[in-house]
Length: 84
Image (cartoon, rainbow, N blue to C red; front, side, top):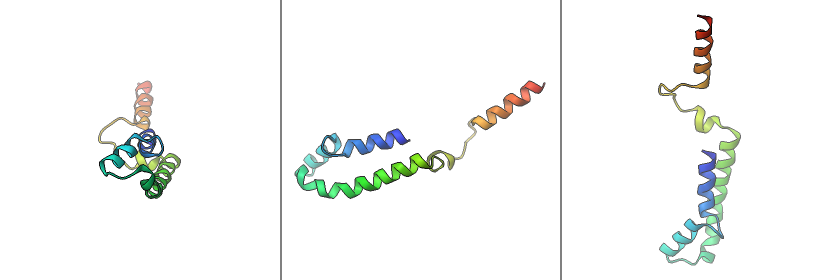
């Protein structure tokens, strides 16, 4: 999740962001004129990235398991099977 979010930020980060230049071309706006308006948005995205990186529970801990095997369940199963 952190990698995907960081790649998304990099896609729109000037001066090399391909998505940034494509959006400016589609909107018929000069990249220099749009530069001042994109920084607050990128700042919020970077803060969100730092929050997700610092507190991983936000992105993976709050999701229900939906029957998937978590590491604690697997450990418990292996422990029980060794006793037999």
